[in-house]
Length: 299
Image 1 (cartoon, rainbow, N blue to C red):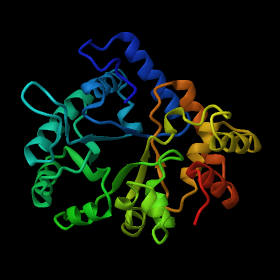
Image 2: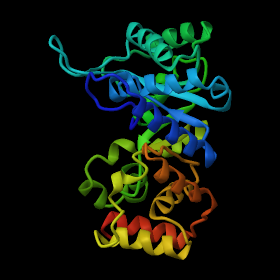
Image 3: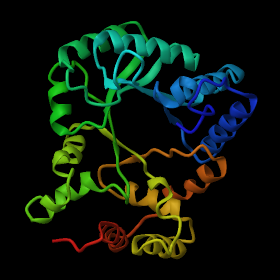
């Protein structure tokens, strides 16, 4: 989402392409091979600038996996902002994604948000046509809870392969709901109850969990900002690494095998995240970070 220039109508510049190239090279340098897009990012320019990289480097496509998301429609002169998982919109969106990325096939298509009017059978038919045409390899979702995944799966002949949720030390709902469900704390943490069983469903059914917002929008960069930020930095010092690497290592330590999505477009910051895979947080360190980020003791 950080690639492609601004969110306006200005065209992609050579500077935008250079920034995207540096970010992709930094990611490849630390072993990242999966690149996550969405048709709305920079209003399509994030995909378009990535597509320019693929056109300029014929070997790049063979070294990476591509996923993108569709289903969010911005407000315009005639309509409010809305979600749209109709078959027509999904198929039209995929055609636009492939054109902007300059590829013939997406490895994974994610449904970006749960559309209140979505019909599993309609989605299944759209995915079936896209797969038969060789345009999409697998289907996943984003921001859906266990009940929505279970309902959608009833119409699909293939398993959902991904669920991408906002999850970080700053966004604990999906984890917190499992530790406080039988305590009054659950009622005092609004939003969490909706995610009940989501992590467990993913683990049971082999759905890869991905965490967007994994770096918590820089909320833990300053050790003086909070007790949680101080804990992050102290643990980073103990492991001789960066705070960002600790944030990612905290997610990686979870038994669900969470894949953190690094949203940064800064090459230096991306490279600094590479340390995360060598850090093995102890249970005590993991819980120290969790409780500090919660801001109150566990029940």
